[in-house]
Image (cartoon, rainbow, N blue to C red; front, side):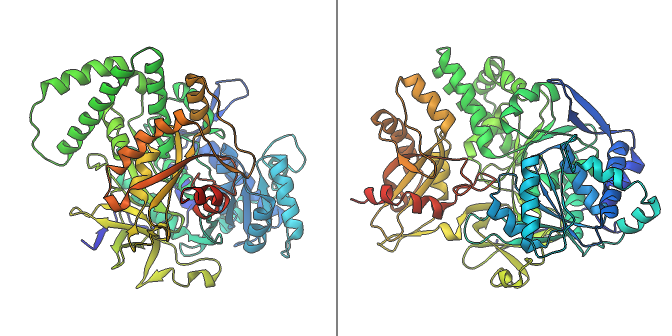
Length: 608
């Protein structure tokens, strides 16, 4: 199959722009709790109703207008994930502005470049430090600017000051401004995180957001509804988190924000979400933590059988979903019941005890990891999308999960596979072009956006990803290698944060295994050894024989999954500063070209 489409489930008639989503929800359920906001005391959360949220949005929008914001003006937001981000986002749209998100980890150079390129007129920072960066960038801009403001109350130039300045703007004036943007007007300019090349400004329209929000809400109504709640801890500067927020807001699903991902697990017991969106690494860490606790209690062997049982149970569940006949297996059923009492129930409790589904995106999800979570009673829905597709392009659906695939096109979207094996996209969520028209060159073909990813469609029209076009390796023997399957298999090991296969123009394949800092320290402590930390901007080989021997088993297992020509002959274990935004993107994707450049000597050693 070379093309797969899914018809839309929801019409956009009756919606002028994104703000209508909030207006409609506030009219339908004004007293429903839309957000839970962290209180001043530890572990306390206060509810915000839909009407209360709308009132805050309208008040800030009036402040934007009083400050001088005109329809179509760009407003930048640079802050960690927090409730005020949501208020500022919707308020900007109510004021007719275009939102320009900036990752809170961005460097001054990146902030300056985005502010200048987008022509930002007003900026909002999460903290005084963010606000200072934005103010400096505005000072360097050639546009007529209106200042930078901070979300933190009690500081100079706080959002509360903006709100106070807008009290004289009438409701009629705000309503007229709110309705200025049409479906085809820009809603946001999102600058790609740039794993390769120059970051590009992706222009997404109100139609893109409306199409995605309404259709995805319809497709996943079993999960996203007013009886559920979620925790958003992904960066709101990323379109996936903002899209999720709009879907939840329009559907009545309660939202809590967490700015520090490391606090998520500790908070789940209090918030008890029914749905979570994570990257695969979070799932790997949950599984690894459970394995570590079992090993500490001398139950490593028992845990290994529990893992195998969960995977087998997950595979059985997927076969039932597919309508296949399943033979009775009393032994598997008994083992599952025993391990549920010993392990699975406790793992579900760690996640709050109410999670019905988890959505995984941002990177490839290992098939066995997906089956494991299905087997313990928490199905993982894997999806796929890009900034240019307003996040989700494809996705598995409840009752139709197929581990190893990223699902069929979501409603209103089409996926085509080119003759070269590239994934092409067209439909409601797919953008019309970059801010800089020169970046559009080569980005589209026959009306389809070129994703740069390789993949294939199965007989049910589900997409199976097979790596990035730019990551393909051609050895000196003329063999073309797609490294994704091997790398994903190695990255399933908790000690390995990233695996990078190398071998372009070389006689054989090698790899760099980048250690997960937290897991590496824990492993070293258990083994009674020490692992040297990397210096800033340094990628340093870790020459520990015990560690190498430990990871050799993982490399051998990954090699067994691929053809002989795709097997890695030599590898080096390295430590890198994964907080360095020159090395990884804000969504924790490794910048392969930067890694290879900084680790050039280590790579050369693999071919001596």
